[in-house]
Length: 171
Image (tube, rainbow, N blue to C red):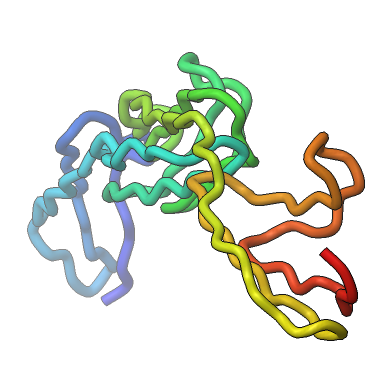
């Protein structure tokens, strides 16, 4: 028999009923109800993050629908989509907002916060080398490290947790 969809194309609400009818001149079946359950988007969940100054935070969220990330609590200032969002380098504590689904199927907007901790002093140990050698220096901190040629913070030499000096012949 020839199949014919006889239903409402503007289904709404959590439950809708669709009627399927098979009809032709030769055969007609009784109406058979088919229930369509619509699962609304659940509010996304993600953990707040704690980072060092001028570091990035990566939020990982979960929900039963696509996630959109915003800079504003009213759902404006879209920053991205997907289960993860990585912030730019932050100098102060910042709150971001996420929402699952879109339109009539959207969840509530949920805040997540990247807390920026004050930069700690880098920890490094000196090195002892023979004249005419290089020194491999390492440092640790909760924030990005910049290496300088002098104590007044000018003459930047490099960035990162390691720095290898040029060949040294005097202290």
